[in-house]
Length: 491
Image 1 (cartoon, one colour):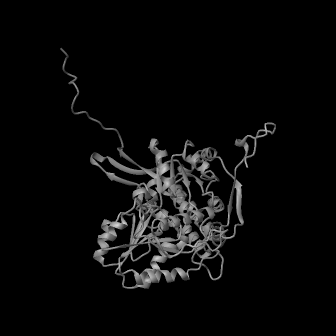
Image 2: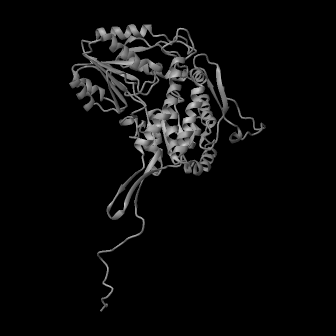
Image 3: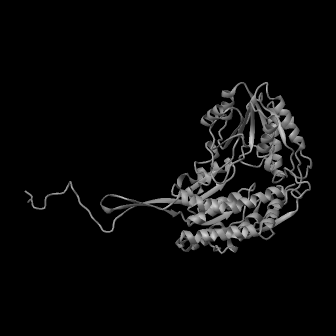
């Protein structure tokens, strides 16, 4: 029933009504955190005011500051992990792993800055010198995701700070408490409040931050759809750096594996870790037609054994819920769409508790599905595709607009060489899960999985820009051609 407008009622200025952001524990529905949405422009102004002083500090000063941050996080490991587990629903053991990654990222970023953006001086002719140094961009915005709400934004923030930038960080509206905790750790480490600003909010605040707020660049981790929108938005601002780390429709090829149980274990880790909410999760399992039976049975048995439960359950679960009911609904809709197109379920996607976003690990044969959608199903769904030979397996691996991660399990060294050479992806593994990407190496994809700005070890590349200088102790100049002889009179 539509409510009629009462013309006698007082008019409320909605611009004056603060928006409240609330996060809940997806495992229980209990409220974890609430707070008011912030003002993007105001946070950028604060970061801009702090930038000159922060950039003026030496590299050694800034490196010491982020080392103190690592120590602060280390001292709060259990508290931090508990908060991440409550706000995301991921198992406590996995949340502790994420906190460890936050700490480890500091030394990795220090090493990366020294290797990727060093100061170099070279001697040139006549006593001249050529110097290459790097400067920070200024104020960088960081938009964080909910699946790794501490580790992934931290992977942008730490290298940005080391390079001399200040940061405005907007965590996902689904995990604001984790974002607030992370920023508080920076401040407790003595990093100025102006150097790392927290912007609470949803899509509106994100758009405002990415728009005319005055930032010098945006570092984004999230969905391909949002990344494409940002790419269009930044098309007319080439002076601003834009680094996109997006999703994937990642292939896992299992071929002539000598250990079926090990291959099945890798498949389960690739597809179902973090309830499938990883951008590197395997979405498509590609196998040789007619030889898949034993492998499929092994994966199905593992799927039946996987514990799906709340983060602090005993025994600890392998999977918790997905982030919220809307996300679970979407994964279920995508699953039904696959079945409607001809997919044959091998392990069904079930929702054990209708009111909560728990999903069971699912496996579906889509070999004969018509118009199979090329999309990232951000949940525990693995699609089986049978092909006739290894060349067809490579073709199927490349049958996507995405290009983030790919793995080959089994095969020979020669087959892996062929796989590596021909598969389009930024992370290509052999006998390892698709989601086995180390922070000590570059991380990024091709296609619509990114914009050729890999993160992790290569984040240093987009946090500072190179400046080339030709230098001499005093000016020397000569013009050899094109000048009139001063001793000749004009006719």
